[in-house]
Amino acid sequence: MTYAINAGRFYGPPGGTIETYSAGTLTPLATYTTAAGSTPHPTTINIPSSGYVQIWGGAGLSYRFIVKDSLGATVYDQDNITAGSVADTIRLSTLGVSADRGDASVTIVAGTDRQTQRFATTLTANRTVTLSTTGAVNGDKFRVVRTGLGSFTLAVGGLKTIPSATAGFVDVEYDGTAWRLTGYGAL
Image (cartoon, rainbow, N blue to C red; front, top):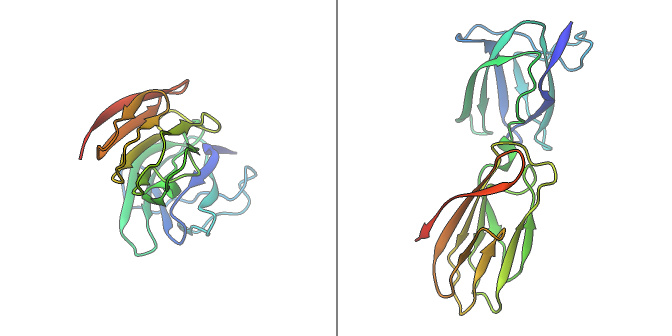
């Protein structure tokens, strides 16, 4: 019998790999492509361009996942992932910095948009960053960075506003029910 790991969903950096081991070791341990457990993944799983992989683990087994980017650099090493538990989805595909979001109000979505959102264009009106709760899971994070100045503000999720003519950042994290302010400051 197999059980879902991370509710059967796993997100990783496109073009990267997920190496699966027995918890606490570097001994390879099989995972499976479906709940039936009839088709094993290789112990090094190639992450497709979507960044999405279905991973199912053996009943009662604990795993260690080492996730590497397309250049082979380790970006995540998680130990003691238990098959049968439903943990929060790991959203590695959204690590990194967005392209400049420009002079616009935007809605950002966890699991879709990059964790660091960059506003490098001068603002010509007050702008708002809306934090969507659609698909958000406990532990999702965003950092909104403003380096483009101007005489207008950038409000982040109704939690904090970066003042006009100020280079700054706002950190937020989803706690399972709402987005929470976790930090802010000037650059």
